[in-house]
Image (cartoon, rainbow, N blue to C red; front, side, top):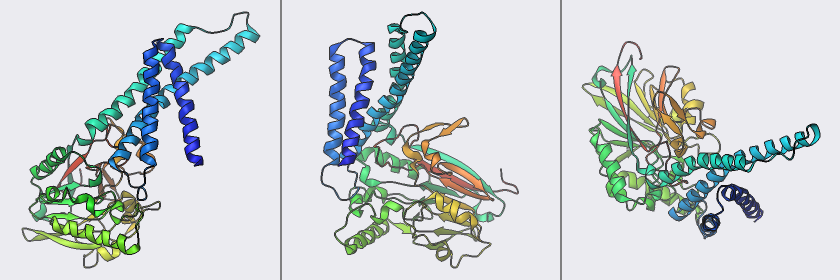
Length: 409
């Protein structure tokens, strides 16, 4: 209860302070009324959605959108208010200086205040427009990102081998069948040798896939579709009636993989063969730093794999690569991960800028990285969770082509 009280007080204070900018810019009463109506609707919907009975931390589409609109409104205030506070501090300090050290009258220029308020609102409109676009279109703005990686010891038979990686489907968040159908079409359109899915098929429960199973079951590749589990697949964020019910949910989800024709690797390995050569594909269960499920067992998964085999590892959380894989005696040539979503928000201009707040939590958060002669690709995710959209960090389909070369490039 105390958290709700604090939240209400903070929300009210920010709204009142933000209104000062609105009032400075325009005296139109209908605009003032509209501002408060929007503030009440956003707040009321959020309170309503998040006080509805639910199982644990389940985010229904209603809750997700309530959070999204609250986030959008708060971003408006939190960009604008520091600018207004800065102006107030400057005006206050200047007024005190003039009072004690000069003979000037009180330092106050209404036109300056109006100009500052206009600038603040203009800047605040940028994240607002981005977040609204992210909820309306950005979450379905699917991008195919292609990488060519070079390895000195890639078996000759796998020269030009193409892998399509997808990750973090989060089917419980989807609402638009036609948009997801287009994403599946884009994946199949790559005509890759193998499709590799790196976890988080659902938000919480296996039943979330009931509507989507036929669609994602239509994914096809020459060597098949391979998959691993992510942290959300274990049902850890739901209040279950019993441990047996939670266990059954996981077994049901494993069956979903099987029904769709996915080869689910549970701390296991497979060999892919091509033109008389072979490479090892290793898949671990989720292993994540910072309180996330740690069921991944790299040693067990690599049983039967030789040290000099060319190895591809599927591991949902990139912190596993950083904390464990890089330091393992085996050399895992390429690791495929997801999990971060790129926070679903950021700025990316290829060759110029790649930034998201998620970088403060994960060193390896999006794209290809190379450490100690080993590669990792962190997929930005196909779906979304929490904020029901994507702004600047678009849903990703990765295509990786393996090439043999004497030196990496």
